[in-house]
Every structure is written in structure tokens, then in C-alpha cells.
Image (cartoon, rainbow, N blue to C red):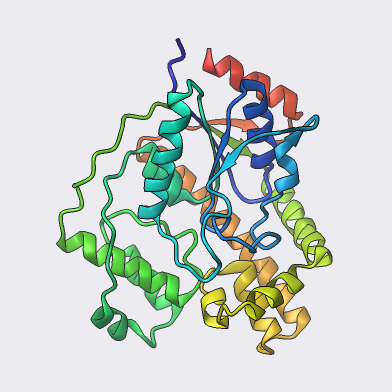
Length: 304
């Protein structure tokens, strides 16, 4: 009997997490559960790097979950993620499968791996009004002042930062320890990639996705009725491409600022993962440049 009931594959953007998770899930005849705060949204494909073609191995479709589950414009949160993860996880465990959790959103991963007991946080209009007008740097600094852990990795717009502060304020003044969470024993594997290679992959992938039509994707989402402010809320690609589409940035400004933002995002991801280790989540790091089959074999040996 295996000592683990979950396998987690994590790492910064562009490190090859999806390819490895899919190959591993195919080997174990199980499914992948995504832990990505943007891939939950329908129509947001290129900008979130869904790479759904990677979920096919030798003509076999590897099942995946928690991708394309809500409409663009909706503000999905970690409470909903934990709830939805548990529903999928329990179904897969009932089928005697060991799920493969894969992603780079630190708070989603940690909420599962450390079993946070979360409650749904309501909107605090008075707090939002008091924070309106503050810069992103000011809001981020406020967020760092809370003792309660929060994911600052994805906080790259003022609206997201205000929502994060709203959550922290709620937990500071309310008892959040109300929902039981099952004991999960995860084999957690991180993909280690050098800074230089990570930067090269990020820059190359950004240009590939621009060539594949990422700007048209944003135009289509806006044409569907999602407001520019709501799309900017998601940050990174959707922030800067929307600003370009509505005329706030030139094309070169958009590309340069977005490239810098993604590099900064990947650095924050690694900082968060190291913090997870300090907070008690053991991560076994393997070289991302190893061949996929070798990485799969390595993880299978860890399982045993």
C-alpha cells in the first residue's frame, strides 16, 4: 500500500510542470487536478498557458480537472478552489486512484497540502472604499503586515491586492477554523530550473503565444461582454494585453512590461515555494532538464 494519497508537481511558470504531470498520470492511469488560479476560466487559454494538447499521450487523453470551470469575468477564489478540489479528489480516491495535483498557484497548493480550514469571505464595501486610490506598492506593503499567510504571488493589480487585504481582515476578526479538511499525505515534487533557463523559456513562450493569437483572444473576451477592468483584474497577460487593446500601451510597451512582469512573477513563485518548505511542506526537487521519462521513473521510485 502506498504511503501517499496524492502526488503534487509544482514549480515556476515555464518549467514543464504540465508535461511531467500528464506523463505521470498516464503512467499511473489517473487524472491531473490543476492548481492554477487562471486556468479555471473558460476562453482564457493562451494567456493562461493551458496547453490542453499536452493532455494527450500516444493518442490517449489523460483526464484533467479544475480547468475551464467558470466564465471569464468571474472572481474565483481559494475557498472555492479548496471546495472544488475536495470534490474531485474524493471521487478519484473512491475510484482507487492517486491524483496528480499540478500547478504554480502557491495559495491553492498550500490550502490543500496544509489543510487550511477556510470560510467564504464576504465583500467589505467600507474597507474597499478606504483602500481605493492607494498604489499597488502601498497595498502590497499593507498585505505583508498581516500575520495570516496570504498568497502575494498573484497580487499584481490593485483590485487583487484589495481583495487579498479584505480576506486577511476577515480572518483577523473572525474564526475561520470551521470546515474540516481530510488528512492528505502528498508526495510533493518541485521542478528545479536555473534562473537563466527559466528566463529564456519565459521569453520564448511569450513570443510564441503572441504569434498564436493571444491578442485576438483578449479582444474576443472583451467582445463577449467582459469589461476591461474585470480582465485587467486577472493580471499578467490579461492586464497588459487589455491595456494594449484599449489603447493605454503601445505594442512594444506591452511586450516589454509583460515580459518583465512574468519574470518577476516566476521569481515570486519560487520565493513562495521556499516559504512553503519553511512552513512544513516537504518538497523533493528534481532537475527540470532531465528527460520526461527519467523524471517519471524518479517519482515512481519515490512513491515506493
